[in-house]
Length: 440
Image 1 (cartoon, rainbow, N blue to C red):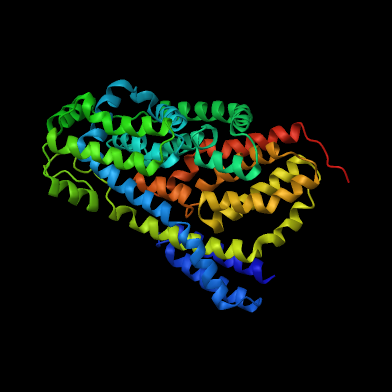
Image 2 (image 1 turned 60 degrees about the vertical axis):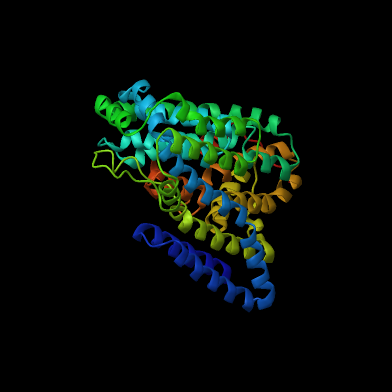
């Protein structure tokens, strides 16, 4: 009973923080203190609890390093003219009447190539947001389409870290998993595309093509060479080079272009990498082409550190294992999948990262799959169709928080990320139609 009370209070605090606009670390810290007290009451020693929290936080350091690199990459891509060039060429190709659906499909393509939602949002996502920023279209709508498309590759790309993680923990072959995921993603993809197409027609993005392109060409030296930093990220991702190395190489290429083609002094580039890029000239693009910087990712990094400490306590004390009793009541495959979704949402909410949510959910449900004679491939696809796409829909989970921060928006994108809703919904309906009962 005390655990349920704690979960309810923590959830209310987190939701209040989101709706009131408070920094999410505050309710997380309050929840950690409350969890500490609960675990002390249950007989755990303070020293062990601090060790578990520290062990959880240490797992986030590599993620924090990547987040800070993303901030630097975005800023230096601005000084190199990479993002402005993508906007410049993109405006001339994309039909404004179909912008939202084009944004969704383009991010799907890029995410399939590089297999990372963060990388997709940091590249094509930023450019698409800039294209739409001068119009009257709700920016959350554009962000929702971009983030939904970015998580298509997070499920279905062989380069995806989450897809590889699930293959490892379920001891399955990733290419077999991807074939099954592609089969279950067809209807959600078609439905999402139709919805975004209808929304696009009703909300055309009215950007002043000639003015924006002329301003970009005046402020930056626009040519195919400045696209090399983005091409390097795509190529290295395809070659399965570690993302940290890919970003460092991209930064080095961007620095050379910034200095020798865009004529920025190194001291100014370094300042932008730290504080974020902004145009110094008085231009209408001043409030559009900006962002990035290591400092901009500092708050998100703090959320990651605190949330992984939180998750370290959950996993180390196995306090959530009591929820398995609810899965034991499942009478059919669809019931079991519904239970996984509930556990996945809870894990994503209190684990605060997609990785921890996947690990927690798999740990809690795997015994039920074995008990009901369901193979590991069924478990793998069920995890992909639940916790992987549900994590970005939790406002304080970094799966959604980081992309929203990169796109300079907030949790308002969530209602418009239709694909992320449609995947578990369509899959549940499909399972309900072809349901089979478990043996008693």
